[in-house]
Image 1 (cartoon, rainbow, N blue to C red):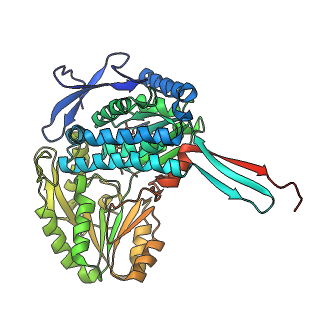
Image 2 (cartoon, rainbow, N blue to C red):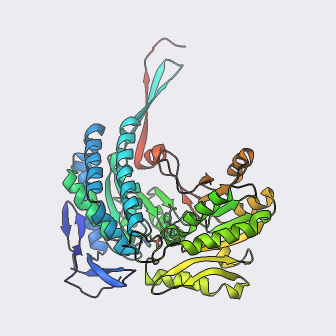
Length: 487
Ligand code: NAD
């Protein structure tokens, strides 16, 4: 990103109170395509006043507008119409994310489909899960209602821009809240397009607002310290999550934090190795390794360590690396120059920690090739820290007990993958892992009814299905006497 002016490029504004606008002070920045390393769009660069305006619009739309008062059927109809529009604009949205962060276009199209599904799922879920009846033995009848919480601030990262933004915006809107969305500064484009389409779908002004800009001492901080905000849902780095939790505590604003991960991918000797290798490659190299859920630490039982490694390296080398716009491309550059420098630091320092690079390394421009590291001690930063790039660390282990202890020693606990053909072991290990999600013989497959989130430094809270309902609403208990005869 840069603040140099490029008036010839397409412009993406904030969307506040139903209008696409410049910043109050007229400031703009450019967003840079990591493949061409050239700016491709100009974006409004917001500040504290723009954040304030966006919360004012969302507050008014919540306190006075029709959205929170609308029935579930009508709200659901508008959210389905928005999903239709996302699907109709698939190419425009996929190109926006692909230009912003270098994601292969084919994968960006998949993300748009998931974004549409987020709106459809939560629209239907809210209608079907709007209340719970609790018949009581005492001659009373209780029920729980789930009214909207109010103004929701959603702060998103750059790795799955549209998909993760809609993972927050869809349940927040479905439950009748109004929203201020702040996309990551590296990937602003699809959020503005989303807000334009929400207006086209008939979602009222001020219900979905988008404000662009930086985090600390700027838009992000202003949104998280505003006392008019009722919920903050954040996905991003653990350090940022801590800053947001501190900021939110001043107003006791509830937070949901989906943070970083250093996830173990455990391959037992009895695994179907073809399947294990195929999913392991997806897990660490899809999206150039920029997935919070990536199985970046691969633990392989010693009996099959050499065979797994040989096949895994071959599969990593077979990935098609190149232009994100080419339909054959499976693997693009990392998302920015700053991120390239961070990942490069890990790749270049492997020897200093006694490790070896088996394949990969730094490529042209902002490419880091699919990289496999071995022989690192458990204390090396490559083994303990989230690299958030296409860098797999592979280590041998001997026993089930040992691998569980290793996996659970991490300060993170987002997810784990387990490859085994032994059903009892699969259940035992899934039960023993201290993480939010366990994938057995697969990766990245999601059911939106299931809880999603992490333990330890990977976050606070869960979203998905009824877990999103609990966060984005104010549940209320109503107890009625229906039988006056004492029991
Ligand atoms: P980041 O924390 O740097 O930024 C995320 C967002 O927070 C951006 O919009 C940024 O502008 C904003 N921000 C930064 N400082 C802020 C502040 N003080 N107050 C308010 N907002 C602020 O994260 P990133 O680099 O964009 O994303 C990568 C990280 O996200 C990785 O750690 C990854 O694991 C994590 N992630 C987690 C999940 C999950 O579901 N657990 C999913 C995707 C990504």
